[in-house]
Length: 123
Image 1 (cartoon, rainbow, N blue to C red):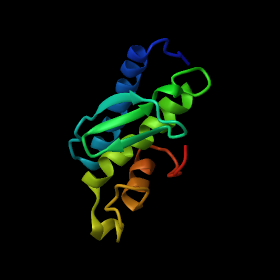
Image 2 (cartoon, one colour):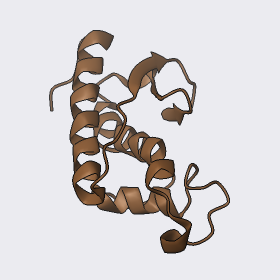
Image 3 (cartoon, helix red, strand yellow):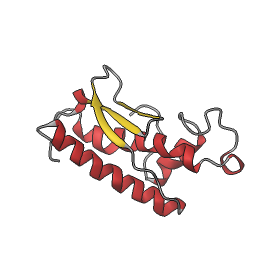
Image 4 (tube, rainbow, N blue to C red):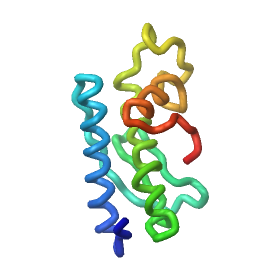
């Protein structure tokens, strides 16, 4: 596994992984997915989050040898699923979901399964 040396390198690698994940979701749902921007922020214990401004925010402290594999292979796909879950949510298929798929509800879990990851809340 290649560890990025700069945040610029990390962003390029994360964008490639994000596009790969979105492609899988598009092929499984038949729907185009909006492409969010990725930005870095120091988040303390939080690894990342997706927001309603079409962004995925990744903890800049995870861009190192210790955390990089988890960041690119688990955290980023986890956040991509938060980004797209509300877009593919269907209450008739997924049932009641208090957050309409935004949180760790049924639609988010379905997205995680579509990309081949277990729907674990904490990664």
